[in-house]
Length: 404
Image (cartoon, rainbow, N blue to C red; front, side, top):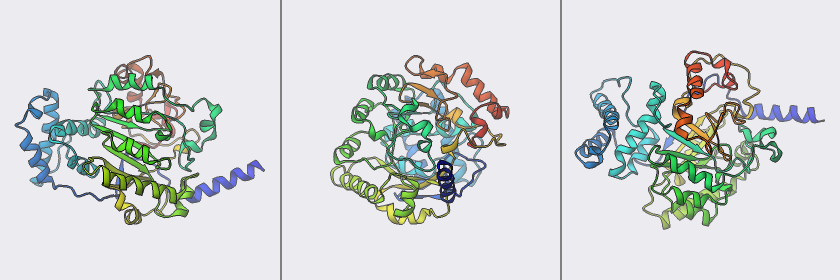
């Protein structure tokens, strides 16, 4: 009987997830992103940057950071002259244009440096003292069991698995204390739903003023007026709601345990409170789904969700739900996550990625070892070298992952 049920579940999932990627490039495909907020053209962005080059905001930068800013200003110059960008040049694009609109002048160069490191260090294979981004997991549990997520793996999500728990506030503060001034991008999310943590408000209060780019990923199902005010009164930059469909039937098939009407109502309420009581909020709201089949249409998403979001997009699908069962593949491109970010789980365990949601690659705890030491450790260097030398097949579960 169990075998029959398992077979039916697999067949149902295969119908829902028709995308079968052989290689996943990080980020959003351009055809799967809709930007609602107005943004400035390249010339105007360059003019703003140029105007600020004569201010203390620029003069107070380190020499290294001035060099990174020059990579961006030169990139804009080439773009405006119709030339191709050089290998180490960069200009802002897509959702960055919305974020750039929302930052103060005194934050502009911090933002440019952060985005350069986030996008270009993985490409150029540069390792700094700290990763460009750190994801901190307040809680590993989730009230949803989405078909494309590791939460659907019962050997992981069962309470008896040892993987479920809540981060203690003291550990959170310890991690934040080290990252302040060294990392700009902090995402509160990973394997679980962050709004399940009863001390999320205290976490946001403790982070206030310490980072330029704080983001929360949430399924929006647990939002209350009190929690909405907690989020909007903080200084986070991005609120990302994980929503994959514009209709009830598809949404509830993908987001198991989710209720479409409740999610829609909560997002509407979030936007209502934001507009009425926080009219000067610089928060960017994103509706971000996972593209798993052709029934998902970004234009339909825009039609429904545009009144409540600045950005609507589908991220590329990776079969996280079966990381350890996926077949060994032929991907030879190094995974950029090894140069972009690391993850701190609820119990302090530090992991290079969340495809490895059971932490087979982890050798460290943030409660015992500084993040900078982990990021520059011999083991981390070994992982990067294996990827660079086309030896992913020697690493579990890298050999089964198609991310690059």
